[in-house]
Length: 112
Length: 111
Image (tube, rainbow over all chains, first blue to last red; front, top):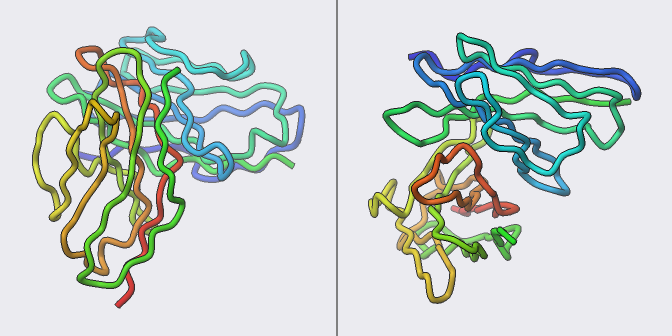
């Protein structure tokens, strides 16, 4: 099976812009979770989607949002970018047969 | 509050020496504990979980509920064990779509 894919792999944006990141899960996986990884805060949970519904949410401001499509692909959006949003954004997907999370390679977002 | 603490940012040992990566947690319910590993230029991947009680690549971890710890151990470190290790928890019995991670420990195994 192909692994979790994330696009794009690298992004450079300026403050105030918005950005959309995409995550394609392993075939058959219906749960998609998003994490932000920074040197200072480490790995922090953003939200999880399952069957097109947000199932869990972390402690991030409303500028961070997401959605999931019927094919289980997920997108996350960050509006009004701030310098502090610079991070590696990881998605992880989970299948029904196992609750192990499989991670993608991440999208490196740099906000200038 | 739910929290995972890994007190060491860096652990440096010589090849063949024993390794113990510490992990302590606080959680109000019954957690499920995991160790994830990230080798250089690779994705974050599951190493082991306490429920399976298995040994992976020579690593073991025992959940100590009294001390709220889940330390990762290996009797003889190998150079290929050099990586970033993360301890994480989720809720038992519920979906595991939400993981709470520790800050991570870099293990450096010197020849």
